[in-house]
Image (tube, rainbow over all chains, first blue to last red; front, side, top):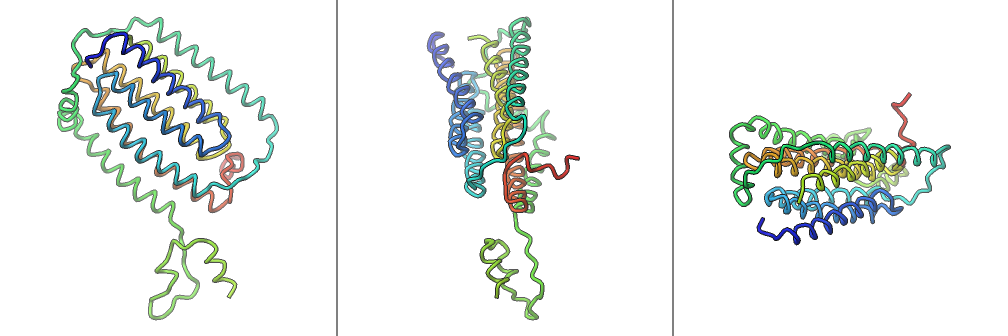
Length: 200
Length: 101
């Protein structure tokens, strides 16, 4: 990327702050809808960090898949299960949170020490830059061909599995002889209609 | 720009994800924390691929795989959350101890 060093550092600072602050918001905010939107902001800032790392293809894939698919899926799930419920108070929840925070801070300190103290073998070769998508495509169809095909099969399996898990199994007690039972035609009916049918 | 900055940001993001994973009561928020952790791993791989392996950029290939697997994981996870919500009528993680003991 043809940016001056100062511009890179400033934009890295802004993007890193955006990523970390929105991630903290995702974890700490009470309202889960705000968390979902902040998660989208965190994903977009992460795509900016990928641009700083000379990876335009992965940045575009990040925006398309994470923001366009996963975040929207999470928002739909929140809308489907968004019941305002008062959580039962669990004994020792505060102690658990403090202990978890301490463990996470310790983990961060450990990782940070490792990152700073390790002499990384930084390569001096010029990065692929704009040709990165060509290199990725060559990898996909030569040495990573089997994982690539496996990922496509995995996505198909996950699609079928998600449908099987999320769909409501609804088998009527007595099937009509003509086979045109309304319950079989509408297997995704909401629960209120099911209960009103039982009332009859 | 240095490799260490990106690795530190990724480490902080991973720790935030772990914290959210352990302390959240809402099942959807747990899934969001898992996405944060996957993003931290992605940032690590991208930083290494840019600074250590800039010619082959295998890290970007792995990141693409992880993005695909994260999409599959989100779909299946949210389907499981929906199924549990339909059965137990709650999304509180403390209530989901059916297979715990």
